Amino acid sequence: MGKKLPDDPHKLVRKWMKSGKVKKKCCRSKSRCGKCPVLALKKAKTKIAKAA
Image (cartoon, rainbow, N blue to C red; front, side, top):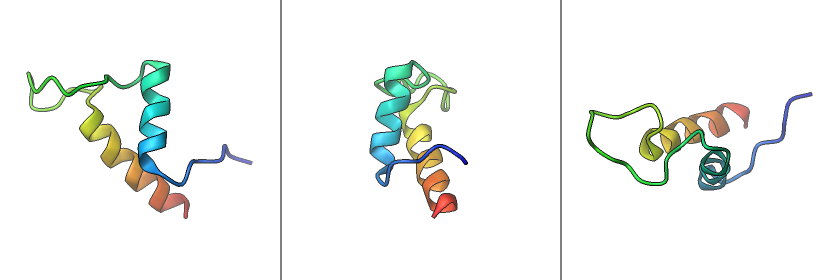
């Protein structure tokens, strides 16, 4: 059994922020860094859609 994902992608991104996987703000210094919250939200949306 896998872990239960929250229904809202924003909650998932907040969880990643607390664990330190995602930054709180987008720095826009690079095209998009690996810890970008904008990309994390996109990833969370696709992850939740796949699980549904």
